[in-house]
Amino acid sequence: MTRCGANGDADVVGLPGIHIECKRVERLNIYDAIDQAKRDRKADLLPAVFHRKNHCEWLVTMPMDDWMNIYREWEAGRNGREANVQQNYYRQ
Image (tube, rainbow, N blue to C red; front, side, top):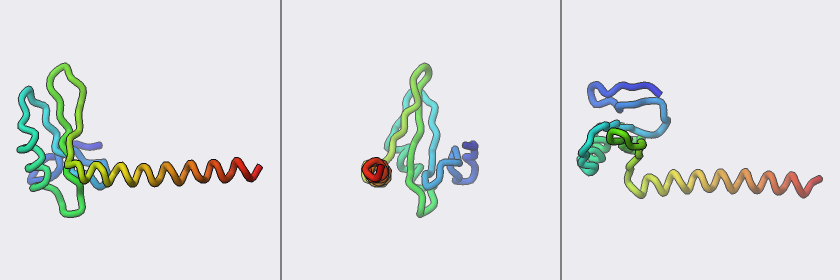
């Protein structure tokens, strides 16, 4: 991943399909940060805020509908892989 953040670009690029706003502050208004990600993103990108405070782990916040869509795609891919493994097992 690469850092950008100029002229309305994402703060970090390299994660396909995601517009990343990166915040490293002690007090964060997460709703303002999500609004910025939504406002600055290109229409086909999902907004996400990567954030952390000092001495804490990185967290990712995004609208729940977007997260659920990503999860459904992951689950569908996982189920497809498991079906292929089972199919190959029973062919032996």
